[in-house]
Picture 1 (cartoon, rainbow, N blue to C red):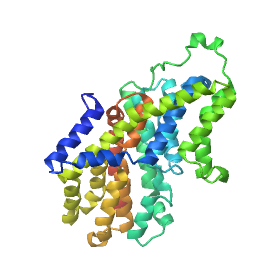
Picture 2: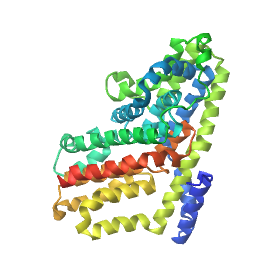
Picture 3: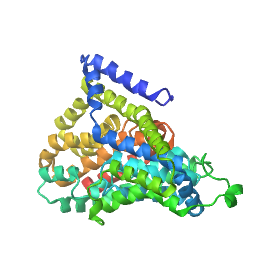
Picture 4: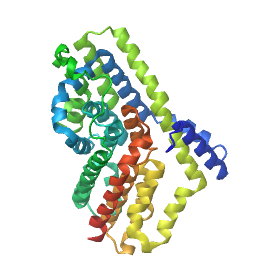
Length: 406
């Protein structure tokens, strides 16, 4: 993947080889079939990509980009940390990392690219903010920590609030520094952006520019309870409503809108969900070889490294598997229940495992959300993962110090 070979081929073949080494010859085929049942993720991805194609057809995205291009240029490189922190906030209500990546990335990634930010940095910014869900007392990971610690969900969020906030700030600032050092904070020219020389002849239609923002408005106001009417809407529902709004506003031929929507859905399956399928085959290969189980077993068998393992263990599992939840759930169920034996607070240890897994997933090239962000930016998942890595590593050790050593 570093050498930029075909990502799906590398992931799938690596998974098959590892499964064969582990003696589970049919495991990769079972993983392939099982991944097809990821209906929630699939539903979100095809709806978002279909909506993006409709925005391109109706030129609503062009009107929004050109409306905001002047204030975005004034924001300059500060747009990078701002985008991370905005995503961190939105993820509190849209708690799925992949769903948040799709919903927010469809809007912010093109806007950042229009402001001259390199696509890889733009994609990395969105995924770097997708662990804000840990601020939500109703988040399943918080509920799991409640089950192993004598505390309420609000107590748990309060315990890791400042550590999590610091992690988000570190990730945002790190990306800004990387973009500055690599000269990727400015200079990128987006293909569908109107050149300054042609700006006077391009009339921005404000009602067109509003349409791309409608789905994210529905999702945020619904999930936060601001507008209860929108509460039942999923990501796919919000995107479909956005498509209808595009038709009523622009009066584009509905046949063309339908064609473009399903064109985007097809591309989403082949280019985005195809990578996710192959990534799941790769993770299954790791499991077939016993690598993930061995890491968990090591952390359980060596209590003396409990402080380090509670953060680093789920972090490494998150990087390899692309799932922060899988890593932290496995750790909290097996290890955190014994936190008192290690002289640690179950609440702090459980939070550290959950945050560590999320940070590792945020720099994993095989994570579903990372693949979505990379696809929206038009770059390789490895390119976005490399840019997130330094900040996530620094954030990991900073969080460990605050939760486990102070």
